[in-house]
Length: 101
Image (cartoon, rainbow, N blue to C red; front, side, top):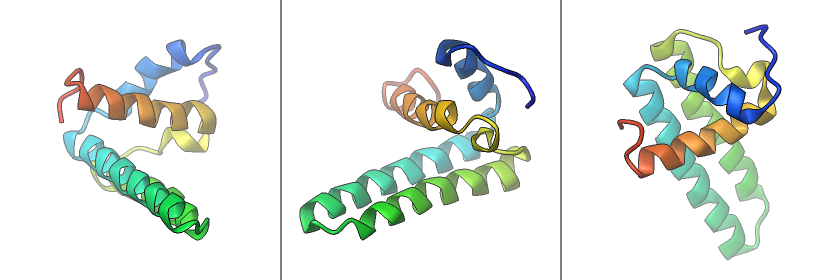
């Protein structure tokens, strides 16, 4: 993962290659859904502590997918901003059926 990327467009195919395992992708998707729910709770209850839960849950589900199913290191460790964006683009791509769930 020592590669350098000059744009997100260049990074995203690499990101998808790190998510070939369906269980890993599903865990990412579930973690993102939980994170969205916790963000909604933070807004509804006006309690920013829920945002910490959103961050932890999103990464916890994803990292379990990587360490136990994909058997690779999450891209977050080397490319945190592109990886965060990749999570949400992949989430959208799963929702619209571009990537199999």
